[in-house]
Image (cartoon, protein in one colour):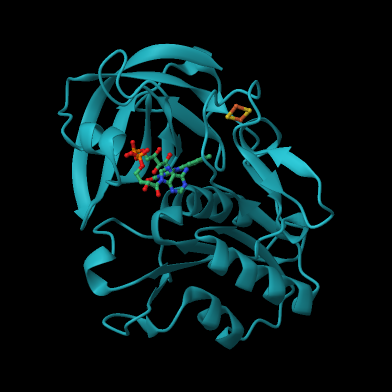
Length: 259
Ligand SMILES: Cc1cc2nc3c(=O)[nH]c(=O)nc-3n(C[C@H](O)[C@H](O)[C@H](O)COP(=O)(O)OP(=O)(O)OC[C@H]3O[C@@H](n4cnc5c(N)ncnc54)[C@H](O)[C@@H]3O)c2cc1C
Ligand code: FES
């Protein structure tokens, strides 16, 4: 993990209020793996003061470039959306624990809801390369959005399933509903990132199929490095974990999604 100033190599809109930001990655900082994240100073030196966390959506070591996909939500992301190639961002990372490999012989099912897209896309590319070596089946990526205007204009892996809540494109329904319709004769291994109701629905599916479930969580963060407990997430047994230091990827079956 390292803090460094990274030149922005490109910033492009990919859907309504969604952007992809690519920037130069310093190899000495470490490998930015799928599920891990970075924090960015998203604004001037003191405003906003708290760094903003984002999950990696790709890493291209040959180009020395990493990326994240973000949704414009408030002050920090509005500032990021105004950057241009050649500007510089203050980056701290890689942070947190990423995904573990799926069990041998399983079919990885990767579910992204809304802005959960970034880490799932990165994981899909990574697992597709590893699946080619034969220890598990090729991954299936399924992405859910409210409506067609949110579908990302990005090159997606072959066979990606797109779902919209309003039926304006792809499967009509939530990505969790699609999951129940997916006829998998191979034991599934679930990976997901998205809003809590979607994560809870996948927890129910994983329990019904007795399948492992790795969940990339999002929580408000302050320090981002395990020092303040500002990012605590509740588990079903009533205990708490810090998303930044203990996660952000957890065994999804342990999390109290329906709080
Ligand atoms: C580990 C981790 C990975 C993340 N990865 C991504 C990513 O890849 N892409 C992405 O777009 N966002 C990601 N987020 C969320 C992102 O950090 C927030 O959207 C961002 O900090 C908002 O900053 P802002 O200043 O624009 O918004 P603010 O002005 O701080 O808030 C604006 C609105 O955004 C909502 N919001 C802010 N932060 C969060 C949050 N952490 N969770 C849910 N709602 C929030 C609030 O409801 C608020 O109303 C991640 C968060 C974590 C903890
Ligand atoms: S944000 Fe401070 S402990 Fe996680």
